[in-house]
Amino acid sequence: MCALREQRLDQEDLIADVVRGSEGVRKERESQSQKLKRLEQSLQATVLDIQEFAKEKQASLNQIDVTVTMHMHQIEYLVDGRIPADNASALVFSNDELERLRRRIDVRCCRCCCCATAAATVRVRHCAWRVLG
Image (cartoon, rainbow, N blue to C red; front, top):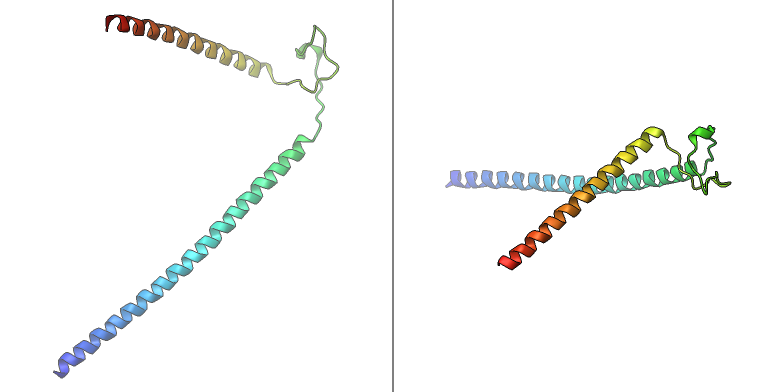
């Protein structure tokens, strides 16, 4: 009888230790969860600050006037056969980029023509199917 009582008390002590341990783990988890939330908020605020700083920096860089020396053979911006007095709307880029843009335009035109041909073919097939169906 005493042995059973001792065994039950030992089991109750073990259960109490497990419960205390689980409570400690739960409190630690809650604490870590709160720290994580604070860190995420801090990170979000930092990211927003960096983005705002980048916008301000870009805006200030956009305000800087840049003077570029060019030769007449480099200028292809003509209005009515003459160089306009105001070049504010002019776009400057290299000949390599101009050639790349021309090739891209050619590719797009080719795709457009291919799509139009494919659409016409589909239209003809559809009409033929409707007549046969």
